[in-house]
Length: 75
Image (cartoon, rainbow, N blue to C red; front, side):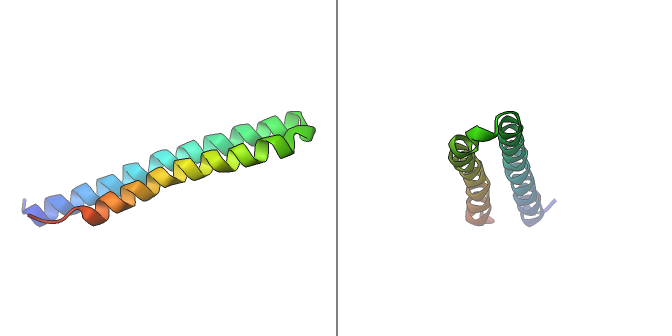
């Protein structure tokens, strides 16, 4: 296998893992927040902002994976 092919596979795997894990965590965050709001609708104002912050921090991990892919260069 050529180094370029290996680099392409590594970049693809990095983006796949780096996108999948944050997507699952954002889904879990929003799911639990909606479940909590469904049980106690008065708490919606208190839950919404921390939910958005948690989703933003999880999304930042996906952006870090994208940055890593862009910095990988062939030797």
